[in-house]
Amino acid sequence: MTSSVFNSERLLFTPATPQTDAIPVIFAFPNEYTVGITSLGYQVVWATLAMRDDLQVSRLFTDIHEQLPRQPEILGFSMSWELDYVNIFNLLEYLQIPLRASSRTANHPLVFGGGPVLTANPEPFADFFDVILLGDGENLLGDFIDAYKEVRNADKEAQLKKIVQVPGIYIPSLYYIKYSSSDGEILAINPIYSEVPAVIQKQTYRGNTLSVSTAVTEKAAWENIFMVEVVRSCPEMCRFCLASYLTLPFRTANLENSLIPAIQQGLKVTNRLGLLGASVTQHPEFPELLDYISQPKHDDVRLSVASVRTNTVTEKLATTLAKRDTRSLTIAIESGSDKLRQIINKKLYNDEIIQAAVNAKAGGLSSLKLYGMVGIPGEETEDLDATVAVMKAVKKAAPGLRLTLGCSTFVPKSHTPFQWFAVNKQSEKRLQFLQKQLKPQGIDFRPESYNWSIIQALLSRGDRRLSYLLELTRDFGDSLGSYKRAFKELKGKIPDLDYYVYSNWSTEQILPWNHLQGPLPQSTLIKHLAEAMSHFRSDSQVK
Image (cartoon, rainbow, N blue to C red; front, side):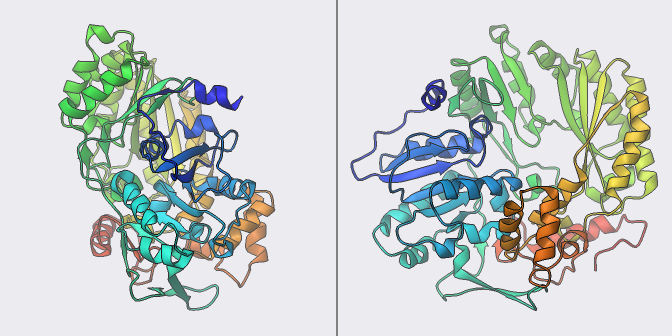
């Protein structure tokens, strides 16, 4: 079974032939193959490693794996979803490697992790990794391997002390965290040796060639898709948005030298093309890119586009997509309330949302998916009424267009101006209110699970003390109930759920990720927070 899955891959790179003393590496994705191989980040890192002749790389997924080395020296995980930590535990046990870095010996591989979850806030997972790569892999990965090679035969402590000198590399065991009490606030985060950097700066790749698929396969969740990263980050900077704040600055792939050659190469092996990025249509040459894909020679191409900015949905865009086998378009509106959009810095008006729907229908698309959010800081009941009103207006303006509103609960994210805000306890009721109002209108309302949003908030604001909770939740069966049970068992030993999820935090307090520097300094985030709160009507302020 395994070999047939890997054999059906069409590679768009040439793997190197490993040297005789190549370093045996396992590169794992903590989920099934179909999910992992659809992750562009995973594909690119795997290809980057496989193109080095000083490494012998094997891939590992939860369901299948390539032939694994008996004595791997390096084991890497790409983590793009918080709840995949359970699968990381399972894979470590499968490889007979202790879960905690502190329990591993010289006979165990160096376990590293990277990806969006660990770059945002690695702290809840920090005790399970020897090394964490913060930021873009383009330069970081090679620098990490080169540093390891220099200390390949040294003892583990010497290896870690050398590797921590590489910018963007975080070695959790080299930092000591002091708490006011076992269930109190963080008092200090300090390196344990003078030569260890006090602050680690997330690494940002500044080139204008972005990521493209390195393999195409029918076994991927998006079957046979060739993915092209058109933009990285997002210039909009919505105050809650990790995808924008954590990955700044906004970068675009060069059209002539990067995007078009990549697409030409991809279309040789498949006719399914995916354009990726947080705000694809904001590429300065997006109209030219569309013209290129619209040529008659590409008539058989099936095109998928990630979320687009509402006011860029022209009739021409909709027509092009409809002709290229796309039936639906996704736009994020967050709310129908002008006040809330000012609070979150969403530069968007209701007439633009209505116009986008009209254009989508006129261009031949059959459905439009909108994304909304409840529990946004400063939200009041009239803001929910505004969302219902705009959805009704959209329905009226574009009859026959199938409308879906996907709706999440606001979750505070590290490195954003809203990291200090709590989850709103009214959110679940608000999701129910929208459901009740919209369903009779024939609008498909799809709320994300409120309870899982709570777990997401816990992990996005968590510190290292959560490692004990994560081990217990897995032992208790990894259900929502198991978190409650684990908190009960650890009462007094770690802060309670309220502390992590339902408390506004002071801008004075030390955050779990204070020693990990994102693209913007805290002083800038505090300014953006103040700007957001200047639009509040009520007293739901952060001090």
